[in-house]
Image 1 (cartoon, rainbow, N blue to C red):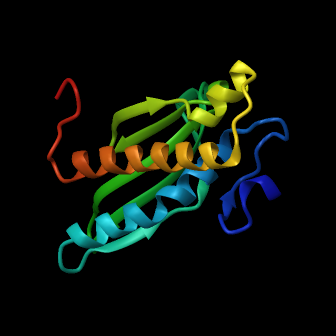
Image 2 (cartoon, rainbow, N blue to C red):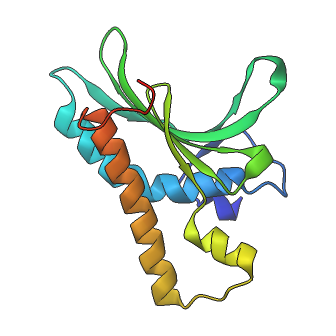
Length: 154
C-alpha cells in the first residue's frame, strides 16, 4: 500500500501483484494541481470541484476491472464536467485519459517503456520525462475540456 502513496486515499484494495492503482496514484498526483486549476477557472458560479480517491471501477458483468482517479465539477443538480485517469488491470502499463465519458488519449509512460526495454535512465532524464508525460496529458485534457480540441470521431 505504500506504493499507492499515503497522500492518495484508495477506495478498495488491489491484488498485491497489480500495479494499476499505483500507476493511477502517481499520474493522479502529478495531474491534480493542473486539473484543479483548470476546473476552478472554468467552473460556473455555484460549481464545486470534487476529486475522488483512486478507486476500482467494475464493468457490468464483471469483465473489466479498471482503477481510476476522477475530478469533477458539480453543482446542486448534476456533474457538469468530469476528467478521469484510468489504468486497466489487464494492461497495468497503459494510462487512459477520459473527459466526461470519452476516451481522449492512451499511452504508456516513458519510465515503463524504458523498463520494458531493459534500459537504464539517469534520475534527471527520468524526472524530465515524467514531467513531460504529465504535462502533455494535462494539456490534452485542458484542450478537450475547454473545447479547443475535439475528440476524434465526434
